Length: 148
Image (cartoon, rainbow, N blue to C red; front, side, top):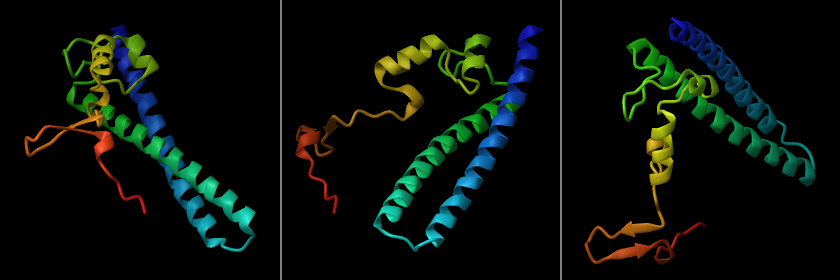
């Protein structure tokens, strides 16, 4: 029964955090629009505005990722998969869910994913790239990028 009560509290926490993130992201977008409309000022003002835009953009990106994870967690609650490890299907301990409410892996599977470089499912090792033509391996140093 304690786990069920914990799940109800987790849902309330996730919904509150989701709503707060949505409001914050909406606020960030309006702030960025206001900053762009204010084009007057000297070079220092422009530099400060640019730095603030960059900080706001990075914060919005982090908040967007967290919002997406919360949405996934809420969907997993609806389907009855919340609190179950995606890798091994064991229960994720409530202590872990309390610390990270949108966790999808138990601590053991998370450690294994981090050890093998598969944390989050999107990690890639770009240090080595296999040549599709079969001529051999390429090093990241062999690739030229045009950054202009």
